[in-house]
Image 1 (tube, rainbow, N blue to C red):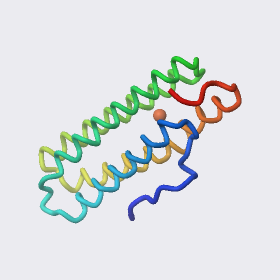
Image 2 (cartoon, rainbow, N blue to C red):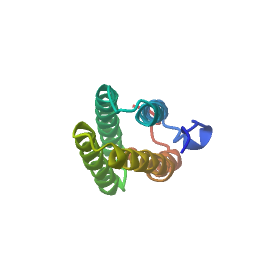
Image 3 (cartoon, helix red, strand yellow):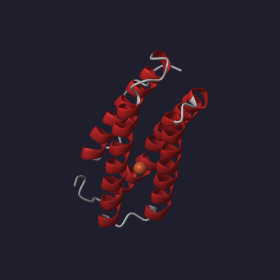
Length: 138
Ligand SMILES: [Fe+2]
């Protein structure tokens, strides 16, 4: 599975979040390259911690923004985020315990999940904000 090339299809047209997503895709690509090529899986811990921290920061930013804008699918969106955080934490744990093969598979899943989330659920709030003439940024 190659790295993911960022393109305009990923845009949700909400200013800070497009930048966040771009950074996330970049971190996911970097992590993927490291996990695939830097066997044995050493020195990936910091990158994964960075990814995890950034995911948390980004999700909280989106959730606050959704709340402020009375986004109707707020709860469902938060549930998706929480599910992702849980799986990311499980992945980190596996990685730290040296379950490399399983971890790589899980990681590919995590990356794909995030891409799908941006393209579907995040795109949904982008459409909501543009049709309701809400303030498009934080
Ligand atoms: Fe989201």
